[in-house]
Image (tube, rainbow, N blue to C red; front, side, top):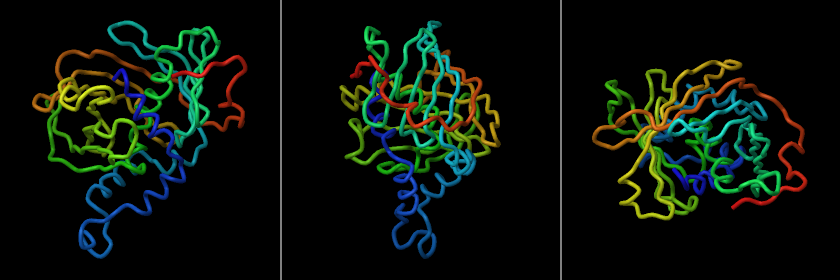
Length: 270
């Protein structure tokens, strides 16, 4: 997942209006689908997922903020407060070490200027994308295909595959396999990263994130605990968790327009 920010960046740049447009123009099955103008099976599944996650209510809020702690191999990867527009258009992370990561809608920055910028863009986009995953399935350039039910850690789940149009992002060959619980909420998402590597090499080392600890905030179900695992198509999740993340103190808010602006003495991150 080292280079996951490449496709995450492209997906986060999609505006709320573009997402709404996509929902209105989603193609139907050949010959009108299951009736005159019926939505495709994939679109119907996406609608069910978005309804289960209360996307409409989620998008009615301007922004969401929460405390985030991520660890891999028992070591802290990032800790701090993450605030983002609900349409994913802007992100700001106030790290517990005093550094700030900002995406103002076009560029990413870090403060102070002498801060170590390695991995800054990755942190700016990746955790926001994992949080937003259930709300990103109808973005332009996405294709959701229902799959046969599959088991994960001894339980059967409805599954789907998320792929991208060839002109979407820097890594359009990336894919995700989503697992839904009985309430059509996302239980897990397996994924590969093809940036700077061949498809064969990427598919040789897929991973998965499992979502749990759903809590309703203003009536919207939010997974407050994530675990990361190794994963493969034959066995699903394998071994013990390789990483974990926790969300706390989540709230919806309406920050001032300048909240996501470039701070003074900030430097651009690559």
